[in-house]
Amino acid sequence: MSTKASMNETPLGQIETILKDLRTSFKSGKTKPLSWRKKQIEQLYKMCDEQRELFASAANTDFARPITETYLYDCGVIRNECIHALNHLDEWAKDEYRSDSLAYATMSKYVHPEPYGTCLIIGAWNYPFNLTLLPLLGAIAAGNCAIVKPSELAPHSASVLTTMIGRYLDSSCIRVVLGAIDQTHALLKGDIDHVFYTGSTAVGKIVAKTVAEKMIPVVLECGGKSPVYVADDANIAVTAKRLAWGKTVNCGQTCLAPDYLLCSKATESRLIPEIIRAWRTFYTDNPVNSDSYCHIVNGRHFERLKKLIDTSKVIYGGEADANRNYISPTIMTNVDENDKVMQEEIFGPLLPIVTVQNEHEAIEFINARSKPLALYIFTSNNNLAKTIINSTSSGSTCVNDVIFQIAPPSLPFGGVGDSGLGSYHGKYSFDTFSHHRSVVYSATWSEPILSKRNPPYTKQKTAFMESLVKARRNWVPLPRIGGFWFWAFAALATAVITRVLVRGFRDDKWEF
Ligand code: NAD
Image (cartoon, rainbow, N blue to C red; front, top):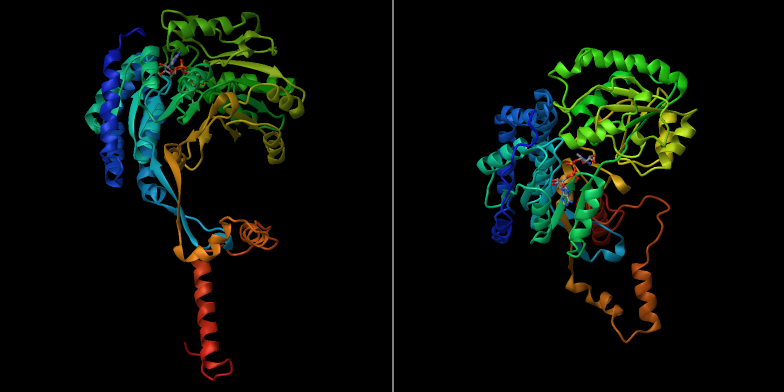
């Protein structure tokens, strides 16, 4: 398998021109109408539908990725998010009128989502289409121009992405730049308004530092070590199957993959044979020949992973073939926090098990480390799960499964602390790529009231203004100014008062 396929890098000299063209298109207002955005999203859907075989074959060439994994986790996910966006875009893009206390009743107020301008999307290689096209979908939905910089580590995928984006999408507003560090820095230093980065925490920090001078929003979708705690009461057969899947889908090269396992010695001995059984069912005894088993992306990562394997602690797997960047599903026991495999994100098919006495020890272990992208808990006791959730912090959590918390478009996907900054998916993508602009229309007839704020200041004016804008606790839920029920009630009350004033209360017929 070649992982050194040359990629046609975009010449550095072209980058400024590309950014200039995108700026001109954005200024023309082309990307703002919902009709343009919907058309592009429909095209994105069509691209992932019509070209899925090409995409899958490119990822297969890049890192022996099983065809099904590209179909399901790239093309399928993107198509579903396109449909979700098309179903909800009108509602997301609407100005959102707001109501406040009586003090602000003379103002008409709303939040207006507006696009930033040119958004730079820096992708990682491991889900080469998902991690570039899902952010792109958010950028388009919010009415931006966008520039996509796929990872150089999956060159065939990056190349088909470039061709297909050019073929399906409006190239006056959406472009791809190919390359590595130089191209990324040229883009970061160029005329851009927003950065959406997916990749390692170390590079994420470089990206954030590089654009700090510009004061533009940066979203960082990073990684880290996502722990799994398996309680003694967990359903072992189901837990094992789900862990086995999560650890080896994409060969463990998934940002949300379960990184290491915390459990008691007793649970460990029940779990290990079941995990092995699941892997044998998935990939046979010889995963190197399985079409369903992905390989490591390149020689550098292969060598990195090999160094994390402590053969004295391997109780299953540990086979490696440098010619194919193949590492078999591997379990390591008697692992402690000082082992190499516990010092960095694994990002491969190695499962180290650290034994703990109980959930309290597990919580302590987790909290002594950086906040992870995901925390997984396997238990039959929801109260135990809640206790762990309330005592820790992570980008997301899934109880009794792994990775699948990423699927529902109603949930935000993102990290916290070292695992990232900001989130996306569904409406969160739209919000991430939108500036939420406050707009207030102030009534001129309110001048007699508002003029009390003007100098010269007096005690009376100060007291009046303080009392007008003072926030008060609601001891009972009060209706907000505005909204259907407020105005319905106000209309009815006005009608009754008018009727009483005009005809008196004791009239026989109550007609308005
Ligand atoms: P990476 O950090 O090596 O590269 C990511 C992107 O940054 C690439 O496009 C690359 O060209 C660019 N880049 C690399 N070095 C750079 C530098 N010095 N300056 C500027 N740009 C640079 O990441 P990767 O190996 O492609 O992906 C693996 C990492 O990404 C893992 O840590 C994984 O957890 C994380 N990841 C996170 C998510 C998420 O959604 N949170 C998804 C996938 C991967």
